[in-house]
Picture 1 (tube, protein in one colour):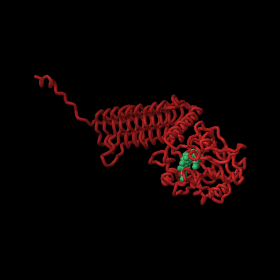
Picture 2: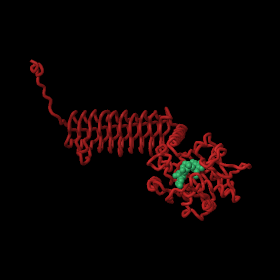
Picture 3: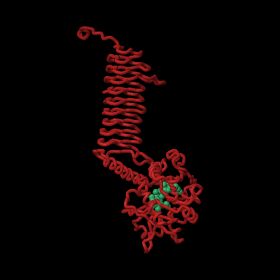
Amino acid sequence: MSNRFAVILAAGQGTRMKSKLYKVLHSVCGKPMVQHVVDQVSALGFDEIVTIIGHGADAVKSQLGERVSYALQEEQLGTGHAVLQAESALGGRRGVTIVLCGDTPLLTAETIDHVMSYHEEEQAKATVLTAELADPTGYGRIVRNDKGLVERIVEHKDATSEEKQITEVNTGTYCFDNEALFQALKEVGNNNAQGEYYLPDVIQILQTKGEKVAAYKTAHVEETLGVNDRVALAQAEQVMKRRINEAWMRKGVTFIDPEQTYVSPDATIGQDTVIYPGTMVLGQTTIGEGCVLGPHTELKDSKIGNKTAVKQSVVHNSEVGERVSIGPFSHIRPASMIHDDVRIGNFVEVKKSTIGKESKASHLSYIGDAEVGERVNFSCGSITVNYDGKYKFLTKIEDDAFIGCNSNLIAPVTIGKGALIAAGSTITEDVPSDALSIARARQTNKEHYVTKKNN
Ligand code: UD1
Ligand code: MG
């Protein structure tokens, strides 16, 4: 196999998006479009991936990081001009170069691999990935000669009304003989409707020279969507969502309503998990087996153990053990660790806290900056008072402690093993193990007070 290089075009502003955010950074299923392209390409083990950056160069760089190298296109003079910026990195090297657009997030590694293999088998100098579209509006059209061979590509804006009838389109993905590509690019002009240097013109240049130009028409039409505006962005979201959800269904996950369930391309879900509508599994989230998620639950960058249920709740950047019950209406904030068999009930917020095995906070609690042991009971309305307006302090609660209703634990404070906090207490000092602590005003009953007052 010869050397394989990739060039990803990501320098455009994306005028048609009407956005302050650069086009290729718009997300599909929570991941920027250009990241989808890079992830698919990376799966194929290329020798070098060069990303062309321009508009929002720094933002694109910080999104993609070190996995790719970069070439700057200072002025966006067209896709041909964009590829030419990769010359200092790739020029003069032998091999095959695949060029992809950063706005085709649905393209899969499989299809990229197929077009590469086809190109190599055909020993072509250029192979364009094409698709037959019911509505080809906006795309470059594939113009074939009497023999059915690709002659050139004409942009929608330059096409005659006859050419506009062509339904076979350029998907914006091509394989080239690397050396032939950079030679031909030098001959590309900008005498066209947009005054731009078009990459697709390389096809005609090579064809005219008598070089072999091939086309690989994919049956996976839905992969070829080029996202130029927000309507296409929403279409891409639908296709990607369906693709992700179907893949999990085939691996044994139940989706009650796949249209209303959103799973990140970087999430994993265990067998026999059931997901109810309105659930979003975002970022790098790992879900165990036999879980019940939703309805209306948001999980982000978190790990959820087997047989855990999370209903109408939010869990961010946290780890949850096995057989845990969360919700309805709970909020698990970042850096929390919820161990096995814990119960977090309605209107409970946990922040940057560890909750030991079999502990319970069933209703109306706030647990922040706390280390909670095993089998601890947080009764209704009990809270940690972790913040004095300037600093945050730690609350430590040892195994088997029982925190009565409506208690305030003013941090820093430690509640000893097995200690009992009476309901309504405001605890400001450490409580020894096994002690009962009562910190509230004593009740006074004034007998017959009301009758006297009324007479
Ligand atoms: C392009 C193709 C068209 C094809 C379509 C498929 C050209 C001239 N046309 O049109 O034949 O059917 O894609 O989706 O190539 N970019 C740069 N620098 C530039 C211009 C663009 O990096 O100077 C990048 C953009 O960021 C984008 C990609 O190239 O990721 C494609 O540009 P775009 O403007 O979307 O081209 P289309 O009009 O979609
Ligand atoms: Mg485009």
